Length: 232
Image 1 (cartoon, rainbow, N blue to C red):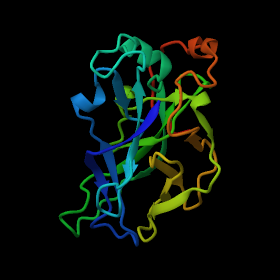
Image 2 (cartoon, rainbow, N blue to C red):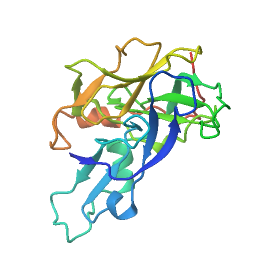
Image 3 (cartoon, rainbow, N blue to C red):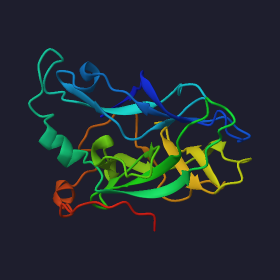
Image 4 (cartoon, rainbow, N blue to C red):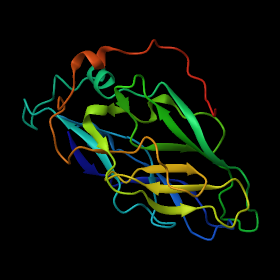
């Protein structure tokens, strides 16, 4: 397991044209096919990223798996979809954390839609989400848009979350964007206080995929049930 800088992004939302005192933006990582699935490597998304004000993120990081039993000249027989879905599964649901639906029509370049920020719900307590995702409509994100990671790959955050944007000046429901780990992924808090729960960082920049994992834990999955968005 290693960390790999994200080199391509797609703009999801920006605060330009709104009445916020700070400038902010949210970006989705874009994975080129050759980058996502190399012969003995595969990279995947763990969340979206906060831009440098209205520009692209400068240090977004994704997670990459490498099959070190074969060279880069040969295709891995281990990194199959089945293994990925077992080791780094998709979430089973999303919870709405915060939303901003008020449009600012004074500026034609303002975001024409709202922003809905979602926290992923892992399939079992043995997995965690290390980033959040957004939509511009109230519909829940597709479950396959990100992957969760084994909790054994992570450790509780040692530092303090860093505030990158809040909605001060809008008069709407308070919300704020934070950086909490080395991946630079988006974390959203309702209100302007720092998030306090579910904050993790990866144990290292490079490590073995079986580090700290009890394989029986990964097999204890929840039943496949239809997911419904929740904002409880």
